Amino acid sequence: MINLVGEDQLVPCVDGQERRYVSLDAAASTAALPSVAARVNDFLPWYSSVHRGAGWKSQLATAEYEEARTAILRFAGAERAECDDVAIICRNTTEAINHLAYRLQLAPDDVVVTTVVEHHANLLPWGRLARRRYVECGAAGTFSVDDVAAALEAHPAPRLLAVTGASNVTGWLPPIDEIAAAAHDRGVPVLVDAAQLAPHRPLPRDADYVAWSGHKMYAPFGSGALIGPRSTFASGDPFLAGGGAVDLVDLDEVVWTDPPDREEAGSPNVLGAVALHAAIDALGELGWARIDQHDRALSAQLHDGLAAIDGVRLLGAAPETLPVATFVVEGVPHALVAARLSAEHAIGVRHGCFCAHPYLLRLLDLDEAEVAAYRAAVLAGDRSRMPGAVRASAGLSTRADDVGRFLAAVAEIAAGGEPPVPYDLDPHTGDYWPHTADEAWSSASRRLGASCARG
Image (cartoon, rainbow, N blue to C red):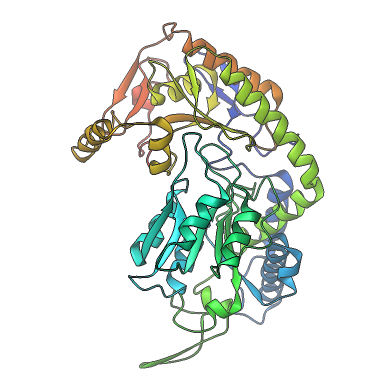
């Protein structure tokens, strides 16, 4: 549909050949749109301090930063820019949700309703500050509006509903508008984790709070956003304390400034804001109808293609998904499937639990004994038994022939043929690495780093 920066990079394979890299990991992070990279490069000569200088460059940089904030508000819903919502520019969705969890001033006995489908970013922050009440999923990995309503009606009444706009594991799209309406009918405000949704669909207009990241929508420069009512941030201490968040400071006193500046202590990520603004403009020019058509074609190709391969089991069975497909190959560890796709076919995918452990354990239908065994192994420093799956996720730059190449590679692995080289398992990380003297893939060439599947 559209090329991204670095789209035609060649990478080495274990057979000594170089192949065009195919990234099927858009659900984790996307490369930059050319227009985003160009906007950042154009701005770099004018980079300066924001809200902290009278010089021409500082004035220009401040204007760019605040124009990005306005664009973020409009991206979250045109009416938000006209009402009393604020846009807080953060590093990413995780920071945004942690930020909100702190600012809601939750008490230990407050209840936050969330679901077992969530990314850890929408589970862990709430558990540090309040009680969580979960909406369970069925065998297909989905839940209904009625399931959410039942959790909202249980006592004590919840302070918040925190729910994903799209699953990062299966690509399932919960009926978020109906869910928000059900929550509001019961007087419960709603946060939508829109990290997966933002590059693919319009953001939900009726959510009280929305959080998302630039690095998943073709602006990988370290920015994200939290949208919410000004009243949430108008009193109390901000999440971060420091310069730029204050009007007055004495050694024993601080007077915080107004939101959103109150919530953005320290020097902001101006380049990230400029990049996110550029990505918003680019998606607007493409149009949601065109993006949706592209997504639906790739989603059908991914799911139908994997379902037709003997020995492959797709996880989840939602009727409509984003172009995200998570699967296991019978008899082949998920980490080895991912390693072979990379080393032999130059295809990048994600494997593991996708920072959504509770959800994946349900999709894999593991019993208590299996969970206990891998937990004991991890606590002993052995991650080789970690359960998991392989995820292929497409974006704007993914072509039908990229998906075809991926499906052919998975079919080859699932058929049980011997790989061209043996693979070594690192029990500490749980990853596989090809055992070869080839310079690019030799053990000596392996760079230090953490597990490919941590999280």
